[in-house]
Image (cartoon, rainbow, N blue to C red; front, side, top):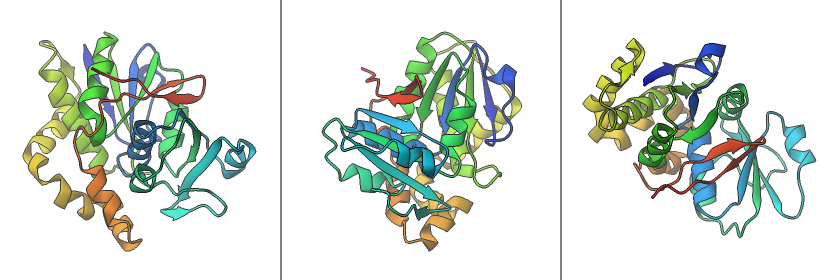
Length: 238
């Protein structure tokens, strides 16, 4: 089994998707928001690219969440905030989500054999479910504004470390090896490190530090969200 890492949303190639499990990673914040929404009772998350597509799906049972460059979209129910959604009682409603990078990555990966959503909040559940498919895995980092995001890379490093404990003959790309080493070096500093990343600094400026502390939690949810028919559904991992 081989694991490859794609560093930004623009860089994925067809051979990194076909007949693979793709784990979409956007730690700050789309992946964390999706995992939190499903972990707190939303029946499904529907990722869309534009605000127009989101508004077209609004009904009494559908909530809209999204951001553009860290700002809430006018008229939406929520921003792209996991702490905001953690405080909600969803009661089976659906959440339509549009974000700057994360939802684009999900759409680009849709031809994979399986598409999962990963973040620190569900790291063990996500890689456990991915490995159960017995296919090569692509860790697809969304990045930030066209550039690599350290928080996504560190999550990739954690997923690789967890996979190595379960697969004896795991093959890694060079980037994966570097990110694993980085994660192992910085693992005990995640809460203090995330506010210092490029995305983290931006969120701090927008007074969203609570989201950073929340997103730094490891394994809060035993949940591996998966994409099917353009929706993201919860899969509980025991």
